Amino acid sequence: MKIIMLGAPGAGKGTQAKKIAQKYGIPHISTGDIFRANIKGGTELGKKAKSYMDQGMLVPDAVTIEMLLNRIQEADCRDGYVLDGFPRTIPQAESLTEALNAMGDAIDYAIDVAVPDEAIITRMAGRRACLGCGATYHIQYNPPKQEGVCDVCGQELVLRDDDKAETVKKRLDVYHQQTQPLIDYYKKAGVLAAVDGTRDLEEVFQEITAVLGDASCQ
Ligand code: ADP
Ligand code: AMP
Image 1 (cartoon, rainbow, N blue to C red):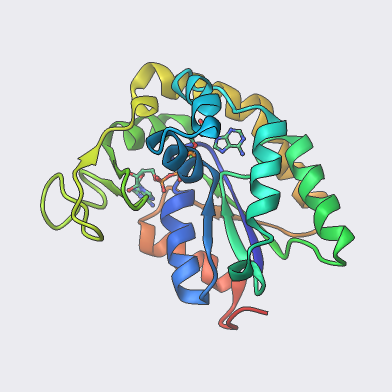
Image 2: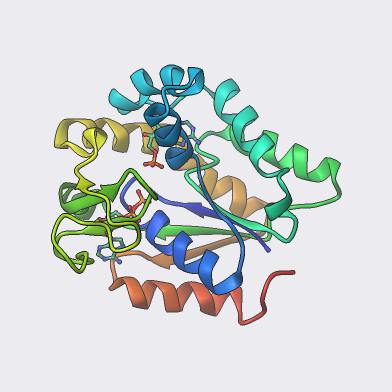
C-alpha cells in the first residue's frame, strides 16, 4: 500500500503517518526528517537544505526528488510506504507518478489532513520535536510522559527553529501557493481522501483507517 499524506505544515501528517506505518507495517518516510538528520550529521545534503528550511522555503525540487526516489527503492519499501511531506510541488508529484508508472505501479491513497490556518499557528507553537528519532509531541494535545523528554528514545525535545511564529506564516504561504494544488492533482488521479484534521488525533486516525481498510499491506 503506497500512501501520501497531504496537508499544511502542522496539520498532523507526521502524527498520523507514524500510526499508519505501525498499523500497516510499512515504513514512514518523512522528507523533513531526512533533511534534519542530514543537517545534524553535517552532510552536503544537509548544508544545501538548511538555509531553505530556516527561511520556511522549500528545498529545491532537483535535490528533493532525487533523494526521495532513491529512498523508495530501498528494500523496506517493497510492500509500500507512507510519504509524509512529499510531494510538496507539482513537479515533485509528476516525478513520483512517472517513476512509479515506469515500474507499472501507482499511489493507492493521497490523504488530505484538512486544518484551517488559525489552528495551525497554535499547533506549531506547541509542537515539540525529537531530533534523535523524529517523534513529535504537543505540549497540550499530545504531551510526552515526562516533560521535555522523548518517550521513544529519551532525547531532549526541542521547539524546531522553523516552528517559530514568523517562519510558520511563511511556510503557510508556501503551502497555499505550491502544495495545495496537489489536492486537485490527486483528486483527478482518483486517489484523494480528505479527513477532518481538526478533531482529536485518535478520531482522525479512525477516519483514516476507515478509508484504508483493515487489510495489511498489498
Ligand atoms: P505535520 O507533520 O503535518 O507538520 P505534526 O504531525 O507534527 O504535523 O503535528 C503538528 C502538531 O500538532 C504536533 O505538535 C502534534 O502533536 C499536534 N497534533 C497533531 N494532530 C493533532 C490533532 N488531531 N489535534 C491536536 N493536535 C494535534
Ligand atoms: P516538515 O518536517 O515536513 O515540516 O519539513 C520541514 C522543511 O523541510 C520544509 O519547510 C522544507 O523546507 C523542507 N522540506 C521537507 N519536505 C520537502 C519537500 N518535499 N520539498 C521541498 N522541501 C521540503
